[in-house]
Image (cartoon, rainbow, N blue to C red; front, side):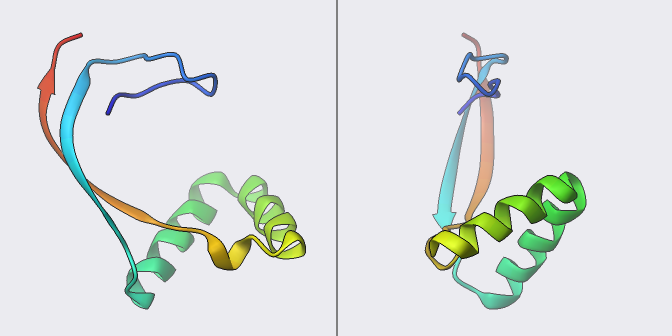
Length: 72
C-alpha cells in the first residue's frame, strides 16, 4: 500500500503489509471513536447519512500491519 490523495495519486513509497477484517465489538468501538475524534463533524455527518441509507451496518473495518518500505 502507499499513501495517496483523495484522487488516488500515490504520494509515498509503497509498503508491504497485511490486513485483516476486524469483528471484535470493542475494537470496532475504539476505531470508530478514533475516527470521530480525528474527523469531527465530517465523520458525524457521514455517519448520519450512512444510517439514513442503511449502509452504516454494512461498514467494514480493517486492521493493517505494515511491513518493509519498497521504493517506487
